[in-house]
Length: 68
Image 1 (cartoon, rainbow, N blue to C red):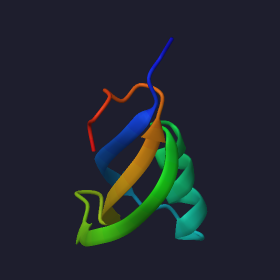
Image 2: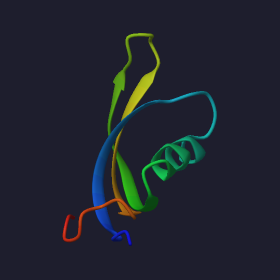
Image 3: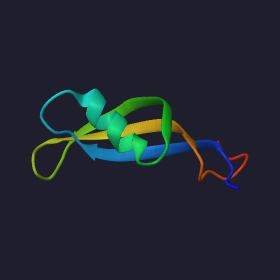
C-alpha cells in the first residue's frame, strides 16, 4: 500500500510557443496531481528562450507521510 501525501516541488521548464498553463500543468502532472503552483522566476535560457521556475504543491502517491 502506498502513502498519499503532499510534495513540494521546484521545477525548471523552458517555455515553448503557445499558452503556458497547459505546458506547466502537464510538466507537473508527471510528478503528481498539482494542487497549486506559481511561476516564481523567468530568465533567459542558453538557447535564448524563456526558462521558467515553477514552485508547486502536489498530491503524490510517492510522497513520504508527513512530508510537506
